[in-house]
Length: 81
Length: 104
Image (tube, chains in turn green, cyan):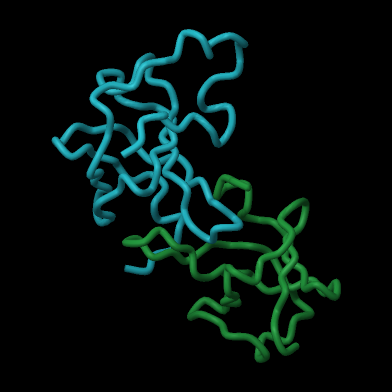
């Protein structure tokens, strides 16, 4: 499935048990290979940010490969949570 | 080099012989493959692409991403397929398709 970057930005991100993590803000890619490594997510208010890896701007750093369904919302399958 | 993907939007793309193809207007993401499928340019140089149609430049044609984006390959000229130009409104830019069929 191919999607425009601008379509993916702003989508709500949920865990596979239905918890809202936040909104997709950006992606981190490797320019030499074209591989996308991380999704940067603006955390929802009720999220315990300490449980996640975050960047300098407080965005959650989630592995791109954990993205499962990408429809109206994005479902993430996060290990050991 | 790791970059945030929105940084690519607005960058100029130049061909291997130094011609300006246009500015990146969007990035096409291959979700299952976790990779960038291509760089979408909506107003292309009409000397390179017929009617300045939108093209999705396959990421494998990219050689460098810095202040500008350099390609290692781009067809001499991209023309609109007469047979496929059937339905109006189904311009090349209407979806994330429209990759020039030339392969390497």
